[in-house]
Image 1 (cartoon, rainbow, N blue to C red):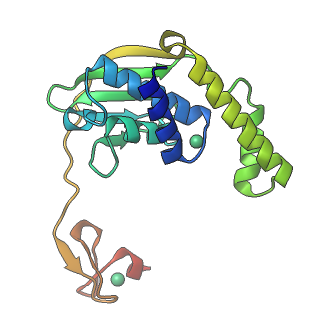
Image 2 (image 1 turned 90 degrees about the vertical axis):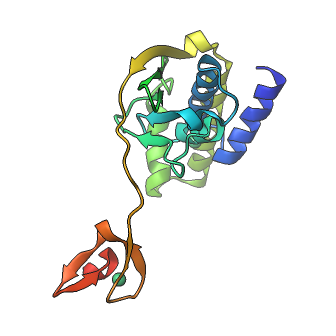
Image 3 (image 1 turned 90 degrees about the horizontal axis):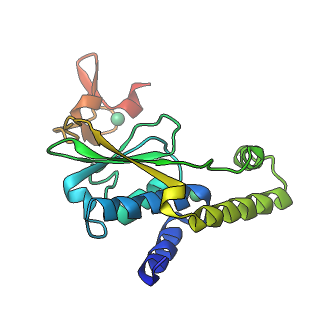
Length: 197
Ligand SMILES: [Zn+2]
Ligand SMILES: [Zn+2]
């Protein structure tokens, strides 16, 4: 990695909160997308929409590096449980899909640990083991060259634009303002989803 990439990787890890295989792949795919599509840092969102085929760690890399974020409508999560990230030109639908070529985990064993941590049955020792294992695997993946780690495919998909802002109405029950598509009528009164149940 060049010095700048080293710095960016550190920033991405800080943004994400830890080192893991997911953030390593999200970071590397994003840096490769930037280079392949010849865009500056965080400028991909101006022309492209990112499509992530999973909803885990790597999307933080996509957001931090390419500037395609959930907030700016530059990121679609199309969860198919795959470690693939696409960047599609908004106007033409042309783009690239970057797919992880190697297993995210060397074995499925760490996932058992992950499950225990998530459901709250892991001991303190197991929690530390999980942190160590995911950090180690993340760094292992960072060592691989682009062509060993990732596969780049040319794609063309048209992503229809979708409005996300709507007129606001007030809930007759709690008085809070909310967007109209979420309204329901209760005896002629406009009610928000929280007051509906
Ligand atoms: Zn992570
Ligand atoms: Zn309400």
